[in-house]
Amino acid sequence: MRSASWILAAAVSTSVAHAATLDDVCTTSYAQAALPADDFYRGITIDPSSVVVAPVRNASVSDEVWYPDAVFDYCDVTFAYSHTGRNDRVLVRYWLPTPGKFQNRYLSTGGGGYAINSGNSSLPGGIIYGAAAGMTDGGFGSFDTQFDAVWLLANGTANWESLFMFGYQGIHELSVLGKQFTRQFFNMTENDKLYSYYQGCSEGGREGWSQVQRFADQWDGAVTGAPAFRFSFQQIQHLYSNVVTQTLDYYPPQCELKKIVNETIAACDPLDGRTDGVVARSDLCKLHFNTTSLVGKPYHCAASPASSTPFPSPATPEQNGTVTAEGVKIANEIIQGLRDSKGRQVYFSYQPAASFSDALTQYDSTTDSWGLYVNSFGAEFVTRYLELVNASTLPNLDGVTYDTLKDWIYEGWQRYEDTLHTTWPDLTAFQEAGGKVLHLHGESDSSIPTASSIRYHESVRSVMYPKLSFNDSSAALADWYRLFIVPGAEHCSTNSLQPNAPWPQTTLQTLIDWVEKGVAPGTLNGTILQGENAGQSQSICAWPLRPYWTDNGTTLECQYDQASIDSWIYDLDAFKLPVY
Ligand SMILES: *[C@@H]1O[C@H](CO)[C@@H](O)[C@H](O)[C@H]1NC(C)=O
Ligand SMILES: *[C@@H]1O[C@H](CO)[C@@H](O)[C@H](O)[C@H]1NC(C)=O
Ligand SMILES: *[C@@H]1O[C@H](CO)[C@@H](O)[C@H](O)[C@H]1NC(C)=O
Ligand SMILES: *[C@@H]1O[C@H](CO)[C@@H](O)[C@H](O)[C@H]1NC(C)=O
Ligand SMILES: *[C@@H]1O[C@H](CO)[C@@H](O)[C@H](O)[C@H]1NC(C)=O
Ligand SMILES: *[C@@H]1O[C@H](CO)[C@@H](O)[C@H](O)[C@H]1NC(C)=O
Ligand SMILES: *[C@@H]1O[C@H](CO)[C@@H](O)[C@H](O)[C@H]1NC(C)=O
Ligand SMILES: *[C@@H]1O[C@H](CO)[C@@H](O)[C@H](O)[C@H]1NC(C)=O
Ligand SMILES: *[C@@H]1O[C@H](CO)[C@@H](O)[C@H](O)[C@H]1NC(C)=O
Ligand SMILES: *[C@@H]1O[C@H](CO)[C@@H](O)[C@H](O)[C@H]1NC(C)=O
Ligand SMILES: *[C@@H]1O[C@H](CO)[C@@H](O)[C@H](O)[C@H]1NC(C)=O
Ligand SMILES: [Ca+2]
Image 1 (cartoon, rainbow, N blue to C red):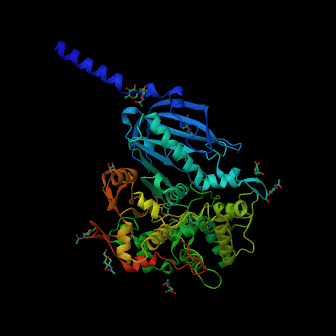
Image 2 (image 1 turned 60 degrees about the vertical axis):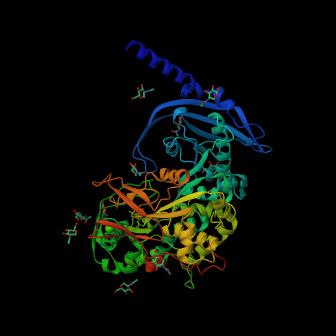
Image 3 (image 1 turned 135 degrees about the vertical axis):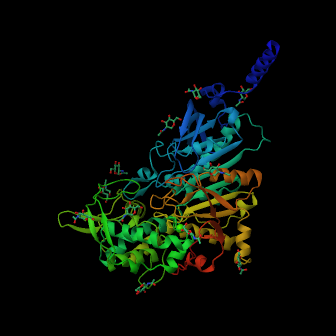
């Protein structure tokens, strides 16, 4: 006994001498020594005195949609760099796993809205998979400062450098520096493989595509969720619902549209073969459900205060009424998408069963009536990014027609084609470098139309494989780029109106298995994350296949359905140029 325990103790102390602990490496001097060298990135100078380091233990995360619950340790490192010749300062933050947990992986993360990062909230998604995880402030002044706060130097004067940093360069620099820092921090040799990943949703999804499209050989894989790409289309379509109410001159009480959504969910739920409160086939809903049947349904909503999340919305009084023919017409016009005065399709909109988040109206208590509310995303794009004035709201939409929206889209498309548009469809270099993409989008997204992701996937397919049939090109593309439409899901998250819908919480793990082990995901690993069925797993089908429950709602199949596929694809004939 005695000698055996002595041997054990000796073995432990030997291994401790070799394996670095968090305390060994999570120091300022160690991090400074691991910084990329001065000539590593031409034009960039890192300030070693800016390095701030702190070990963090037993950090815990729970109820997140992009990674499972976890408790972990990490080393928090921030440092600043500047671009030679420009008097700027860009701050980056990296979380590094405990040396024993590092698995030769690096992850870049992005932001949402006009933010280039998501605070600290995306970084655990790397740490728990043994990856160093990074984010940037884009040079905007602090991790909390958004691009829209620095984009104008004065009315009429744009800060073009900030646009390029936001568009793609900020995440690129974060990634190139972060990979080298990670290598040196963990004593990797030139021959050691460091797997490089990206994960982000919404603006973060756009940022992911900005990297895949431009810096092809920098990535082993990317998870891109509901990307805010085709930027001017995306931002201006936020105003479309408001212009519909103005054009049809009917401002529905908010409760009326909420009722239409609830009834649409109830009516279209069974069309996917299973009555579970989830509209897994909004395409069948679009093809077979007519909202006209809802006229006369009574609705009731309690009063509610103004709120800023998930979208800014005004206060509302108690509402009692019945669904009107005008209300149904508004809903149908929104779902059909923006067309110009000649009837040509300009853009598309949300799927039926998605909330009408953009179509909010505003209650006026003095006249006891409902009126126009102007969506803040759309308004800010017009003021700050088209007119170049320092304002984020529009007082009204006087004189604004469907044709005005088209003109705004076109102006923004031209101005931001090389920075924010982000739909370059030729991904040859990325494919040849062996990269993989998992792209996903909620089917009931009420902030970025689901059809937007399908359009880009189809653009890449047809540009990359022009001579192959639909099926053959879809299969060829699926070797390295797969799109998953998540039934019932909202914008980058679960949906309180469809609590039984699955969500793919472990998509980065799925990507890692594809990249590192060659396990191509036929379906995504979905889990119900809320409500009475929380914890149940449910596969998510890969586009162009669509989910359908057979055997009386017990067996999920991923089926090919031409009419459904066609319903997702729009001929944007209002424009002479192709809209990828
Ligand atoms: C972290 O958790 C472990 C296990 O629960 C515990 O032993 C340790 O003391 C904790 N460390 C800190 C710094 O809280
Ligand atoms: C992010 O995490 C670091 C520690 O890792 C902490 O110092 C910082 O305050 C956090 N930022 C926010 C916004 O929570
Ligand atoms: C824009 O307006 C805000 C206040 O709304 C002000 O803090 C900021 O300095 C202004 N920026 C410019 C460039 O005028
Ligand atoms: C890297 O090597 C140095 C020198 O041998 C050592 O002190 C340090 O702990 C090592 N770092 C890691 C993460 O193993
Ligand atoms: C819509 O359904 C949700 C529950 O899913 C409920 O909370 C809400 O009150 C309903 N709204 C209307 C207008 O019926
Ligand atoms: C819905 O039904 C109404 C009334 O029956 C009809 O006028 C309208 O054309 C239908 N709409 C669609 C899209 O089928
Ligand atoms: C609205 O209807 C509810 C019941 O559905 C009722 O309790 C309430 O008094 C009504 N409010 C108004 C203002 O009519
Ligand atoms: C810039 O334009 C905004 C919006 O028109 C206006 O409110 C603001 O006063 C202007 N700022 C200056 C400094 O003129
Ligand atoms: C394409 O593949 C599906 C099965 O995935 C099949 O049902 C369909 O007939 C094929 N289309 C053509 C034109 O071969
Ligand atoms: C599927 O996701 C669940 C929930 O996040 C997770 O617990 C499980 O490990 C995942 N399964 C696989 C095979 O990745
Ligand atoms: C089909 O499923 C429903 C709901 O789960 C159940 O009520 C019904 O009995 C089932 N029908 C058959 C034929 O199994
Ligand atoms: Ca269903």
